[in-house]
Length: 262
Image (cartoon, rainbow, N blue to C red; front, side, top):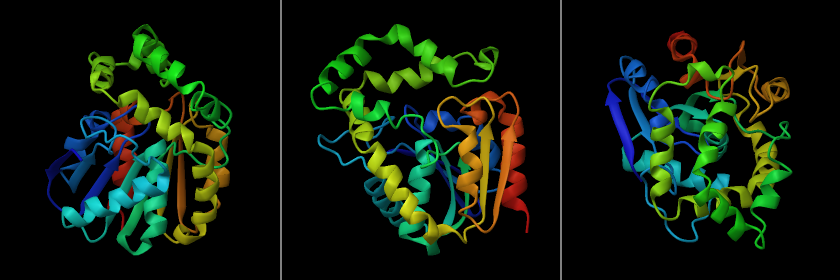
């Protein structure tokens, strides 16, 4: 499991979303490293981590591996910051070991109240259609710019090198099979997550969303937030699914304000 480490101070663990890897945090890592010891992971199957065949990619399995990672690097408790599906991994890990999570920052996290993906995931991961899905993904590099553009509220904010940075790990064999494995448990994961939320209700949590997010519905922020007793919601105007890429300065300011307050 490959990870980046920078800075000193209390531990902060960054967890990327679907299609992402530690590259996602290239703007955030040096800023947060001024205040924390930051760990940016590539979850197994993604980025430059290994891709074992038949890897269980359920949220629970990823949460188990994340907790074992904390053990390996000597982290007792920490702050978890997760984006999109990484937010789901963060919540599931917190539910399994709530005593190890001091605070959470969830950036447009997948959740049971967002319908996006619920219908498409079972179709794309269907055992009959999955081989075709993988072939299309392998040969569909022309679609990469369109996918990236949909994740932004304003496509003019895409910085040079962004597409190349996200696309590079997909040259590694097993990458697309990994995505299919994730989709195959998508709906079960969300239902399981719903049942786990009472276990983390007490953890102070910041929800960050872009109001132009087309990947995880902004309307799901309020019902998700009701599951926490100490929850703050920031809805970023004109921003899409990845505010840490699109408006990094605003994102850093919001996160540090939450994490450094008494």
